[in-house]
Image (cartoon, rainbow, N blue to C red):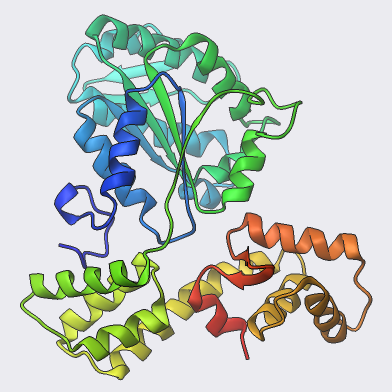
Length: 365
């Protein structure tokens, strides 16, 4: 169902992404060991990824890295996520256990896989060498998907952590049957993590496939709503749907939530839209609160953009007036680049604008 608020895992429930799905499936079959699936929050990256993994028909590991934030980005949490996925895969591919048992620090008991995270325990490289050997013996390939992979930037080595850039470079050189898929809603941070423009990065110059998901255009948004309501036997008036798209733009996550709420309450008036917007604002305010912790100036910059001061000089004047202190040109440029990397703003026709209309409702006039 199109209005299911959980990530989709069937093509029939994945609307408007046929081209991107085919490209991702083709990337699975290419020689590139690294695939980047990029796009702002709530444009459907996780749904696209899950549908592709299911349709591909090969073994895969899927790790939602948002769990790392709750665990302090530690090796313990990452190994637990990996253990759970290996347990799932082993239940379908019996011979995998015989290869896993040969890895120091891996314990297989029944269908359960446990990984020793301690200093002298299992290493990621040794684990995936054996997985690659198993795939070779089976004539299979595997996709390892890291959802919200920009969070890996906080595990770049250090005590109890893993340097994933070095590991991915190792995978390029040594693994023939494993592909890594990294999704990122904070696109700039993910690219910084990879070091695409950093000659000192072990991934610099390495070929990668990139698939970028954009927001729906207006007509696609309207058709998404029409089809979703028809699935439930409803036909809201065109004026109602036009208003919804005016407010929520082409952010499929917000459109889905509106459809789910309207169907559940069997109402399509403006009160339902206001209810959805209020809930969306609460979710987004929580996300923004974490951004504001990075710099007190971010709030002033976003307020300026929200009030229509989209040009660089106008943002600088407004942010200085509200903060009460001068802001250097270099500092303002860093602030704007930081918000772009977080996919909160983007530059269009020489002016900065919000990527998500809900942000505009929070920080605007």
